[in-house]
Image (tube, rainbow, N blue to C red; front, side, top):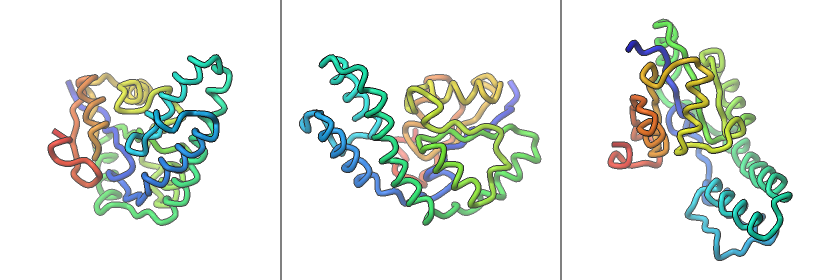
Length: 201
């Protein structure tokens, strides 16, 4: 099968985001505990998405399902504030623009799938004038479950109109590799982010 599309991660793959994840997690955890979540079930060692999963279960088990949407949206807004601040100081990784240009010349479709918010992702794409290279952008607010859940990648493939065997995923995280494996998409791991080479294999 011929390759028709390349799907990129953002942070650590195209741009060096310099986001202080620990501070983001601490602020989100603080907000969630103020909303009544027991501090003992949340950890700053887990992602905000794992915290929100626990939050949803806790609220539903305590008859507060109606609160899930409001609390989730507020928690993600807290994360977005940090992302937008970090986006002002981010830098494009070497060779990114040239790579995107070369792939476009090869008539390949390009997509971006990221756990960042749409606002912060678009800010970076516009700031570095690389938005024009991408056919599709699938940030966290466009899916119910973000990577490593395969739904994030599946939605991206569907938006591109390509089959799993017609795409390549390029990312720096184990979550990029995991969802690619689930859908049998070829993946290229870059040791430019937080994941070790071992985690990318």
